[in-house]
Amino acid sequence: MLSARLKARCPSARALGVAELPGHELRWHKRSMDGSGKCDVAPASSDLAVFGVVYEIDADDKPALDRAEGLGDGYDQKDATVILNGDVVTASIYFATTTNPGLKPYTWYKALVVAGAKEHGLPAPYIASLEAVEASEDPDRTRHERNMRIVSAAGRLDGAKV
Image 1: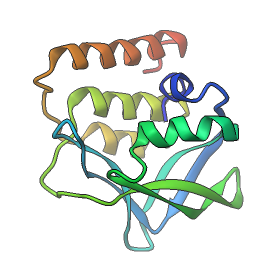
Image 2: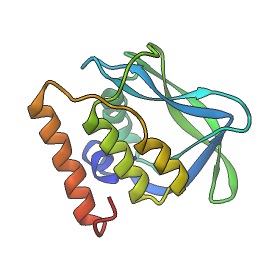
Image 3: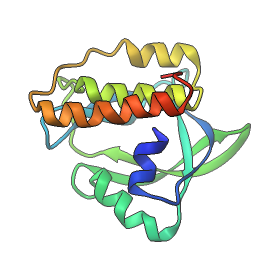
Image 4: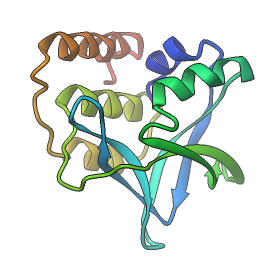
């Protein structure tokens, strides 16, 4: 969700707005190659919803995004019906194919997700639910510091909202 992170992968990325995916919930159970949990949207009761950001990207950027997201290696892709700016639209989403409910995200990954949510003004209760997720420290301190620099930079660029 964080614009800076996505634009590093897909320079053409342009946020179209905050979207709601009804009947789903956010889980942090996608098994990552680094051993932590990453985000996934999973079907849930109709009273739940996942909030996120819909981006438009050039077709030339799609292969880089697929590689970064692990399409075919932990994530697959499908179309989903979301509510974007009051309109019902179809958006492409990645969903986890290999999950483990016991996984936790690393603190830097959770911080990236929260920073993206704040950058785009997702609903405050939803942001609070993201902040409440239990996370663990990454034993790879270099990776932790590299990703936390992205979070810090996003906060400075966004008027310190992060």
